[in-house]
Length: 123
Image (tube, rainbow, N blue to C red):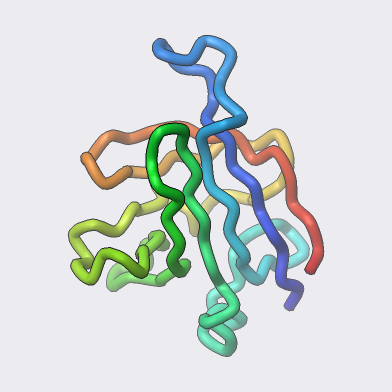
């Protein structure tokens, strides 16, 4: 099991035709050699699995990577006690977190946004 720091940046969209390096997430997760999240590694050291959401004009949010019932992965923020405020990764379990790949996240406001994996660094 290897813990990695993963950086996601907003992908191209109607509002951001070039994407945006100022909008995204950095999180720590144990990844298997194929780039998929290692659930058993997460269970063993879940406190290490932190997330930081960055977005211009909004306060930076800090929290944890959580594994929800049904197998979904989500970001749970320390300032929000309610699980309804979690941001859920769309099929994170099926995605390899390798540079150049794309993933989607359902944000607080229920909007599904697409992000590009721009960096994966060993810790």
